[in-house]
Amino acid sequence: MEPQARILKVLQKVTGKEIAPGADESLFVSGLLDSFVLTDFLGGLEEEFGVSIPDSDLSARKFDTIGKVESYLASRA
Image (cartoon, rainbow, N blue to C red; front, side, top):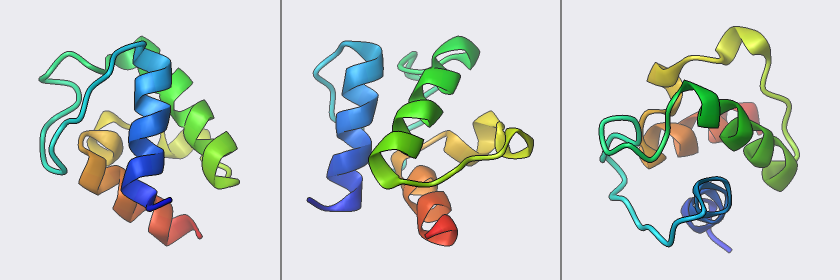
């Protein structure tokens, strides 16, 4: 499964919505994520991708779009 599809799977799981935002669509402006859901989303990403996301990286800017999430995860691989 492609990274973007895996990210969407995690996003759908934490939001409980069948969504498919564009790679550059803001997940926060669209209302899919907020500061509370972000921690669940990051936990899901850690589990799905086998990475550890440090608290110092807990920033909405880094995870605002699917494209930014994909780039971040690629840098942690």
